[in-house]
Image (tube, rainbow, N blue to C red):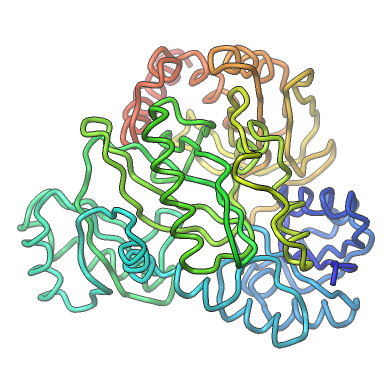
Length: 457
């Protein structure tokens, strides 16, 4: 049955994004919010809103019982989890379904299977998708882990099996450093995810982070091409684009086909992302993990394909079959996305909160802003620092960067520090414009840029 009343179990720009897509489909929207978000843009835009707890995420956005009670009280028939919080929590997805509601995303079994990195790796191997040489299964014992590390070889990466967001990860250069790094990653993984399971992978020095957007209805799947996500700081993405400038047509075709094969092998339903490492030197690609949710950077895919991913998620969750054939999907032009955070990049990205005293977005053809900001809004200190995403499209990559520079120059956010200055500098950098970078490139660039800012201060 089509969704009639949708509870949005999230906040910020993704809640606003979901509300807008749902409204275009005639779906009644209910914004679940904490006490800190009672004056947010999502609450203002939704058809109705319900407070689910205090400011702390653990007592509101991560409180499954409160969210389910809100859905029952407001007669919702579906829940969209957005990204982050409970979006990839299998227990929450299972509880939503058990309550007789539609979970907008894959079922709990798929989330468990593909959300655990070690299980996802085994699933990929079974589907014939290449993976980075690494350990088999989850490792908890340090001695067994050290033996596995010797077989894989150094340098290697230790990663939390239940991880995400750059938590529980260590790069180890030699066997002598392994034990301490393994224990540190376990502590971090346990603190962040309640799980100290680890897995190991060969570390590729000049790797690029490429992801493939997929859509599935449980019976078949399609891809919507690739995204380049290599510009990262502390494993957090900063600037993304679609398509990747690094891939040849032949590699792109094989990469995207492998993502579809993997999605279909698990009967994937909804929007999801297959993440890969691409070795610039050898041209090889390796599956690393799947995100069983919508991604922050989904707008760049929408811009080059013309397909509204949130709309498709809602339609599929409402029982409609996948509306697209693979032959329908074409790459048109190039798109870029900048994440604008409430941080001072010149002061080591110190978090910054305040009231937005002035606001102006860049506009014009091919420019899109996804945000929860408005003049007078007080940014709460309790959540992720992302304020907005500035997305541009143009007929080719060079033109898209030109448009991005213009849009960034027009944008003004007053009352607090943001990462706008960093993005203005990145959009003029010769290596960025040439597409000549990898996952480790931005860290050194940022250090040099910060030094210049301090010298000029």
